[in-house]
Image (cartoon, rainbow, N blue to C red; front, side, top):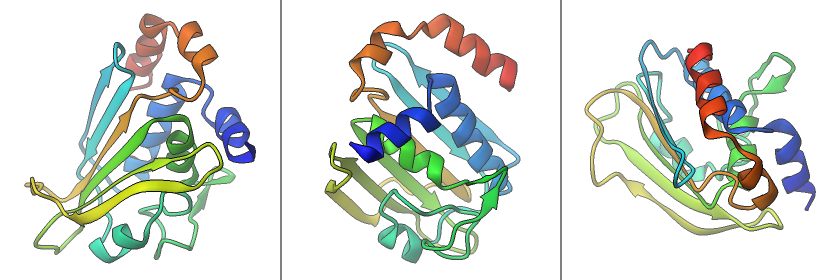
Length: 171
């Protein structure tokens, strides 16, 4: 429950989730960021051309304490008073599933990770490996599946047009 409460306070809206993921892309040196939002299914996709997550780090990364701006998965990069990897962790706790595909600089193959986080914060259905669909450019792709699925009150209160308008203004 503690993980969920912390996640709710850190990521209060769809806009906050997207803004945090975009900020992580920028922190990783991205100069191009693609955003797709499916408000009907509550899915978010962010794809960037930043540094990417090295395969060895992605395999050990479990969605709680890693940032592409860190030197390793257990060393936080703190910016604006918080660790930039924290936002993906918070989003993970609010969503049904997270998928990450990343091609790091100088890597020959992209690596993938897909996982779910239970209400108690434990990870299940963890799948990692070489991505079947290799990325053609360096960077990271993140798919958030069923955002806010663990908070039905938020889903019912969400106003997709307002949230998307905030995203458009942010970009």
